[in-house]
Length: 244
Length: 219
Figure (spheres, each protein chain N blue to C red):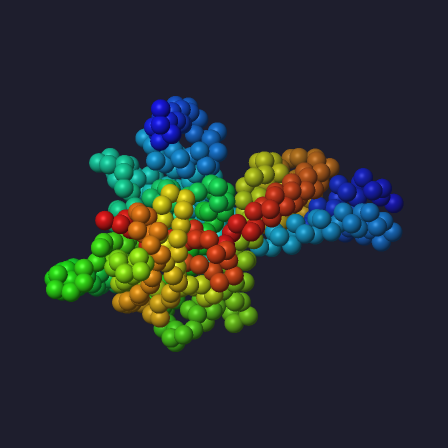
């Protein structure tokens, strides 16, 4: 009969089903009478269970790395600053021809939407001269490579609070059990301006109120927050802009 | 000297020292040091090393989330590493390690692609979760995300094994070879194959336990 040390050596192969039938029988026989080896077995079974979740062992094609680095090299050459302002690259080898039409359409829609935004901002500026003026306008751009964008206008209130009027475009509905939250930030300090959601892609207007302290905060963020998560700003930043 | 000025000088010294280290051995730097390197002149070396460390995991988890669609998984790899380069300033090591941050970037890129792909294939009634509707009704979005997190962790644990231990696990688990067959194929004595398999599994368990400590960081 196998001793414990010998069984330990075989437990890995045993849970992976790699032993010969007679070895497997011997290990099983030992386990039936040895509680300490049964305890050890549980540890191996946990790993075997975790391996079921392993993704397929596959390497991405070798050209992919070269394409990514070539793109970065080309974009870094003129300037290495302000990378987040760059448009989304679509490397040609990955562009499926069937998608090119829909991308062109998206580009057209985005161009029309951008023109519409310019018009809205221009009209807003014009009317603001006649009515109440925002103290600042913040252009909001996506942190990640996305096609949504927006504008935040800040209106001072007699109470000292700031009214924040958000005009958002193409922002998707948040993930299930999530919502959006607007923040003013200064260094590591964040003050929430309020939470909201959007019902569908397209245009969404939101009015929020932020406390007076936010007047000295230079950065404005929109994050996606989980209802079960922390109340601190999450790292899922969807929009960002600097107070002008 | 004012605090701000001292901080700028310290920052400059750090960048200069990082630049000198980067030019020597990028592959010896930690992920967090490489992320800082993305803001400097050695951006290519830093990104290349991060790619070598993580592209298999990103690709594998992309394949898993996108149901084996290789072309979409390649797109995920592309999106993720360009985001790493562009958004390196949003990575804050005090809020979690690089692997956890990269997992979130990968999950987000894969799910975005999944949603886009699903909406192209068939429209989903308004109000339903697109992911939920397109997948097996028994799998909720939370389950899909949890599964992908475990996939990420086990993939990272496998990548962290030495070459000889990884080889026996790949042959035993992924290719389904018996220990005798592995011994014959590799020319390694049977006893060594068995010991190596068990040691590799113990090592995987340790690495998974280490990752568990970070589990709370994933959200």
